[in-house]
Image (tube, rainbow, N blue to C red):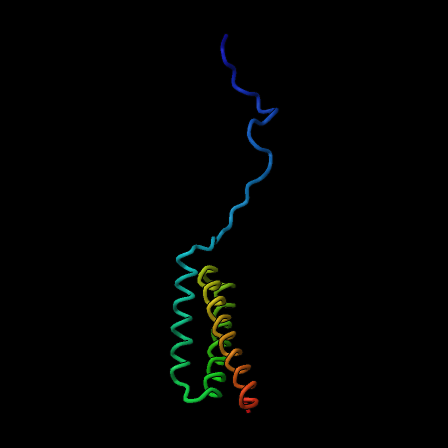
Length: 111
């Protein structure tokens, strides 16, 4: 008995298409973006001399980091943009904890 080649009328493989991410997010890129952003926020935090200046400088640094993350999402590496977004979101949350803690003890710290 001889084996014949399939005619192609009935495909042997899966008929569903396979989609691949054109720019996959890699763990190393996420960690690199998070690390650089943490250093960026640390630099701005070390410039502060009071809780008020820390919060305002952190808000400024976070806004700049988010603009960079959006630019990276559009034209750059999505993994780095994810790391930047995660790290700057965490830095923003820390600044808001400082605001709430200061507000609960001594009053509104931002004016």
